[in-house]
Image (tube, rainbow, N blue to C red; front, side):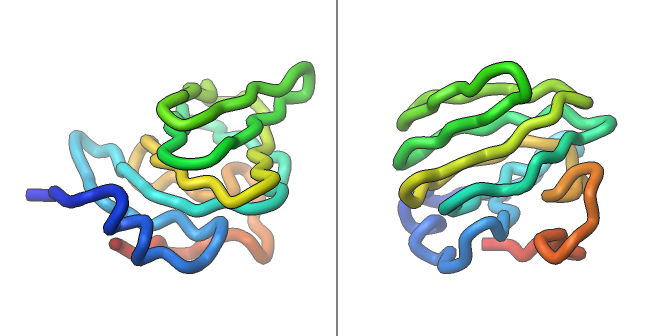
Length: 119
């Protein structure tokens, strides 16, 4: 059984842009990540992705607009939609996505994580 405190789990994460698995259910991962700065433009060919802001502010950029999220706000990015997360200051996010979803989506580069850790 997966359980815990989000505050305690986030306190155990030091790196930015390095999602950690905190729980699994029905083939889905619940991942926690601290973000700071700009990520890369990418999309997920077969997976929808949900961002839920726990602490801080996150801007999700799309090619035609940007969405600003604060604590308690969420957005579901549909599969195939190109996006770029941007955090001007550190933000803590909870991610919901199918197990096996690559953190860099359709791209493989120096930010791609071959395997996600658990927290």
